Amino acid sequence: MILALESSCDETAVALFDPARGLAGEWIRSQVALHAGYGGVVPDLATREHLRWVAPLLREAGKASDGFRAVTQVAVTHGPGLAGCLAIGVAAAKALAFAWRCPLVGVNHLRAHAYSPFIPEHAAAPETFEARWRGLAPHLGLIVSGGNTLLLRIRADRRIEEIAGTRDDAAGEALDKGAKLLGLGYPGGPLVEREAQRGNPAAFDFPRGLGARSELEFSFSGLKTSLRYRLERMAPGEIEARRGDLCASYQEAVIGALVRKTEAALAAGEFRSLGLSGGVANNRRLRAAFADLARRHGVPLLTARPEHTGDNAGMIAFAAACDPEARPSPLPELSIHPGLALAESPARPASA
Image (tube, rainbow, N blue to C red):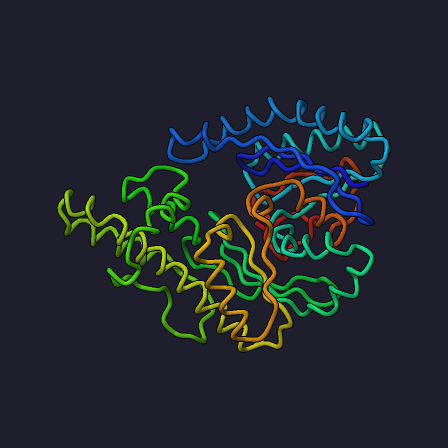
């Protein structure tokens, strides 16, 4: 049994995972409402809340698991993320691993997102998961969140290779900034999606990132600027009247860029499956567009469960079990790495 802790940003989370059976329990404390009044995550406030909630969540998990008696390994996110937040989780994990005299594993948060679409596959049939994995690899995955937009390849041996990232804003960041320009509040992505449901996605023509199909990198800063210029040319009353159309068109531009680049990568490689993960993966229009993309290319679409799209400990525990880079570390050597990249091993410090 693996006990996992996640505290990279504004969610305090604990999970238990049995590699032979699947997730045995998940506990989470969200800070979204707390940070909403500030328009974004306040690092010092987030750190304080992790310090406040990590012990109560562990107590809940302990009560539900007979005092952690079956735990044989502790896993924890140690990068990337906010330094103070990561430090709380790593300190708690070290204390538990020391007290229980069991291995401690540092998990790369981004790699956990990459593997998260496979959690339902494992849950469906843990005993045949290895064979199913080999049948789905090589796998093309897209992580799309507030801080990252990454195309990646997972090979049959579970090694991860980054294919492309973003030159500027991530897709989720673009949605959040667009929501702010439109006066919608925080977190912006879900609010844009809600408003978009009553709008026309073809009402406004917004740019869709880098033009060349051969260029797989994403770019969303021009989209945000285009929205700002558009709003500057509109009267307040017109913005209010057409907010649904603005949100639908803006969201469609983000999704269009994601689909276009992913399709180019899918066509250029020999992939057996397509994956979608990260916080923005909860967007229903994006999921529908990726389902259509997968159908057109004749590959299965694997999507992270809604509870595993944001920051959560379930995917950290799962990654500890299946990521070949998630190896036990001596307690004194495990440290936080706020800038850890997707392809970096948790056992090595992030490059400067």
